[in-house]
Length: 106
Image 1 (tube, rainbow, N blue to C red):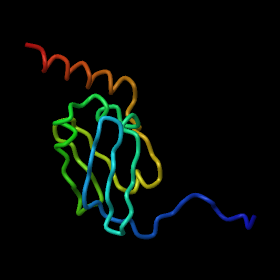
Image 2 (cartoon, rainbow, N blue to C red; image 1 turned 90 degrees about the vertical axis):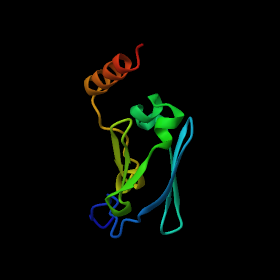
Image 3 (cartoon, one colour; image 1 turned 180 degrees about the vertical axis):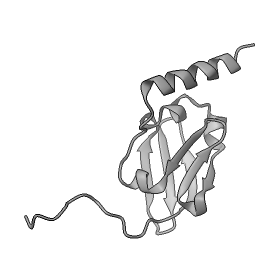
Image 4 (cartoon, one colour; image 1 turned 180 degrees about the horizontal axis):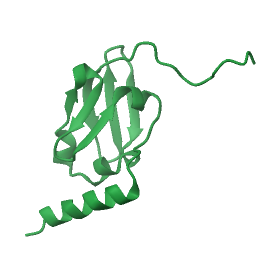
């Protein structure tokens, strides 16, 4: 080993051009030809969202970010490339889930 830092470094982050969310996978097509696919279980708000809520995704920040307005969820392309999962605390997610349940009660 040369003693250099082995952490991944992205010199140019590709931009998202298309997003697909199924019941179990988030797939993001990138402008460099790659597709990132990760389990939606990494992002609890996506996992708890309806198909319609997950489909309502906006490519934001000039293609470097993804935003789900119905779920108040934001993800970055760079984080997905680096394999980063949701960093939301359990307490924060529990509050979000409780607000969601209250809003959807008749």
